[in-house]
Length: 191
Image (cartoon, rainbow, N blue to C red; front, side):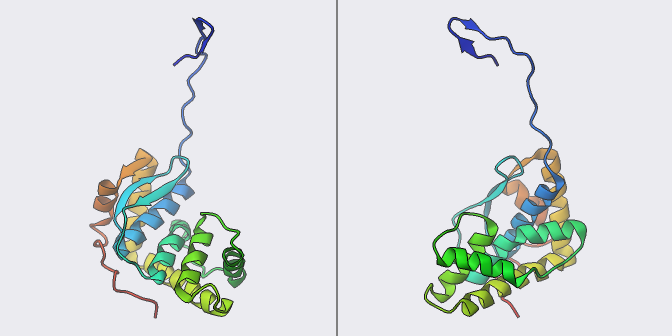
């Protein structure tokens, strides 16, 4: 590929390859995809190329707990990589809840979780109510991620993302399906 300046094309000195994906990113996105798959969210695409993300099809009317679990699943994927599990820090939850309450938030996983929590309880509710549902959704994702079949599916999908970088939703579902059936945990709520 060469650029033109005036009439003469500029010489191409060197084509730069995209750097290989980060393994942590692959596990993060695999966590989102696999737990989303397990909860019954249809996937259109998964990529570890910038911006790394999982694109879901328009979905059923999911509960706030499932929306929060799906958003928290990226962190659970990272924990699965290290096999080091943590329920997180309540202060982190409050920071995101306060941002959303003040309408000063973005599209990050923490903001998405807080948005779903506030949507479930109502923006005028006490923060304790939003915190409770947010923590329940996170606990659901953590519980699912710690199950061996879900962990194996996350590992398999992360490995494929490291090789292919971008997968169709059909391919992502086919990798997860031998370990966990699509929608297998659709009726599971926090306990």
